[in-house]
Picture 1: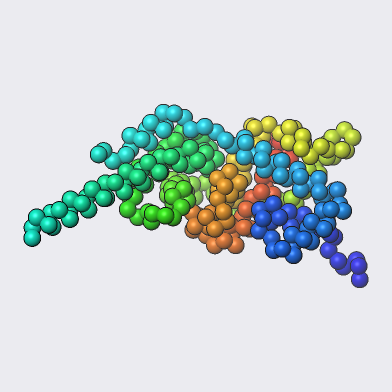
Picture 2: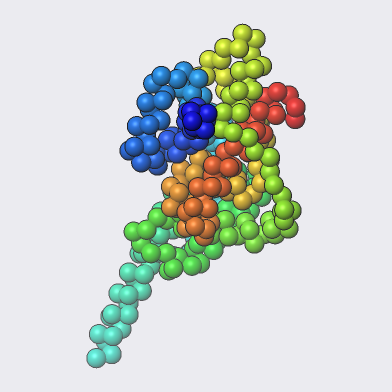
Length: 79
Length: 196
């Protein structure tokens, strides 16, 4: 019957986003961590995802133009 | 008793003015964060600037509808995303658009295949991607998915906040977020491999 079981790496891949978003249940977290502890294939891919998320955030950190800030302030209700 | 009524009225006006000033100051303090999200929801800097201005103009007009003590940043973003949709964004969307999506490991697998020794340093592998790759890939993600990815991964909103901002169920937030991130990674893989 083992042939019908879900591939554990596939299962770990499915759990990745929820794991990194910290929305999994305790038992799901424990299951993912148990697999990650013994599987460098998945562990590398989890670490990569974390780096990628940090990098995406960094790349999107675009400063607001100072003129826009002044324009927004000018929209305030006059006292 | 006219004098007392006048006194109450004046006090009310003064309290309201104070509340309004506080509201406007708090909203302006959040403008950098609002802009950052707006910039990634739109395709140009000009569009983002217009949208943020329109958002603040509307927020300052309807400040009374904000409930003090609730999340002001989410409230502003809700105005912004509604304005963005009103701006005719719907027109751009093909109704049956089904974006291509691969598994969550797809990008890593492609990078690993492409590396000479098949061994990838997962901390350094992102260096194969440029800021242009990231920005370009994100803008290639269809709007419905991109909105959620931008709010959660760049705007740092919770699933619950994103659901309220976009007025969609939290289950829809989760499925769009998960799919949107996979679409983003497929787009990034194309760019990292020089296919775009």
